[in-house]
Amino acid sequence: QNIVSQNMVSQDSGSSTPAKLLNTNLGVSGSVGIAEKQYEKHGFFLVGVGASAGGVAACKSFFAKASPGSGMAYVVVMHLSEEHESHLAEILQNVTDLSVVQVGGTVKVRPDHVYVIPPTSYLVMDDGHIRLTKPQRVRGQRLQIDLFFRTLAEAYGPEAVAVVLPQESEQ
Image (cartoon, rainbow, N blue to C red):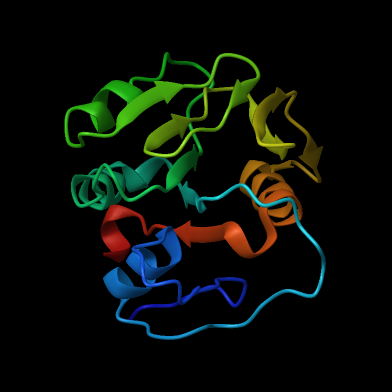
């Protein structure tokens, strides 16, 4: 079942906008609601992808189908072990033609790129940039995906899409 964010927008300009491509890929036609708040226009969708450590296979499957030229950017926030170096960027680069990088500092977001969270970090969206922040704990839980999705929605509004991928056992 396809679920589309209520913030998604389709513009009918006759060209293949990211909104039209996303709506077509998900089997959606027409507009799907417009947020009332005024957002800075970035000109492309930013897709936030959340997954637990058991979601590597789902991430690989998702990005194997993501095509360059769609005009969308992707940010992967996955719960990663603090005790090991992450190879998620390399793993994803092996299954997609999109450019995949692990975020190492403040990065300007560009279409047709995949940005991966490093271990022991949180990501926030701010003014078209991804910024690393220190982990925050709330009652023993690390809420990195909550923080990222919240700042993604605040920064990108109707150009934001959130996807939560299942663990391997949930697929």
